[in-house]
Image 1 (cartoon, rainbow, N blue to C red):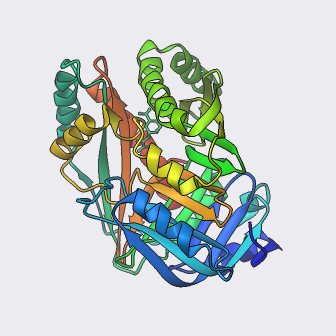
Image 2 (image 1 turned 90 degrees about the vertical axis):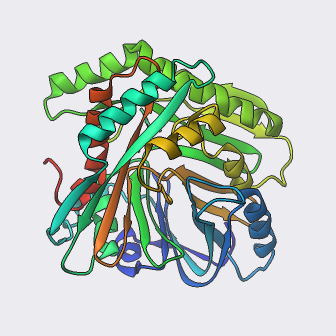
Length: 386
Ligand SMILES: C=C(O[C@@H]1C=C(C(=O)O)C=C[C@H]1O)C(=O)O
């Protein structure tokens, strides 16, 4: 990262320094706060956006570019990719273990909480997707639902971010400003793509089971997930597709054995994919644009699955299941999949959760999976299960 980035701050200082409009990205390796944002690049086509960002980073006063891509990209997309050019970037080490002892920030109680669609309608949509999956052209589709919370008082995104950081020692915790003035926050376990020099990494997740406070049930859930043929299939189509996308950009692509990985709320199947970049001018954002949306959040084949998402989900995904991260002038960067997330507006919060559907998925189990996935943000709101 370039010289204008200030290294060595404390995580608590970065959280204290964060204000809506800034960009925050915490990982297991470091925490990054971009502020003094005086420019943003908004563009619907992510490949064009990656090129515009590369050009903007030729300015030595811009230490890096950071922001978020929406789920739907391309010339006809409703929302643009939104990449900020912060004037000041502060970096500290990883938030944990220090962040675990930060006090939980207080957040008001919502006046109302409304699922969209109603749970029974989500079950029906999953059942309909299962029928569609009998058509062998469609192999997997990811269906999501939302939870809309309304508050009497203004929401403080900085308080939600603080609690997300506190409660999620691993993975990627983020806050990114959106074009309309709201903030997209979340704590995702899933690395879409990182690039350091010629090294490329990805850590796709697909296949899920809930955590349990009872250690016996918890271990049993992980064991069942590891052995689930349905979840392994759901996972395999993601890896196959991502390897195909990365192949033209990389040599020595390696796929590690699939493992069960844990977040505080979920178990997942995860696989590390690594490669060596053949052309060093290909930036982390350009690679993220090529991979997004993966079958972990959309389905496969991509266009058919995207159509089914549009047909069966009664809301717009916006920036949910997009990509959030940063890229610097060298082309290095990290982009995470923007799940376990919510959009915070003035007095409302929209939480999102989805799950991959294959031909042998059980609609009721899929509803339960989305309920469990809402927990990441609900806990940060002080509303989750203890
Ligand atoms: C779509 C989400 O999660 C994705 C879907 C998963 C699944 O279907 O098992 C697992 C991890 C994520 O890639 C979400 O959390 O909203």
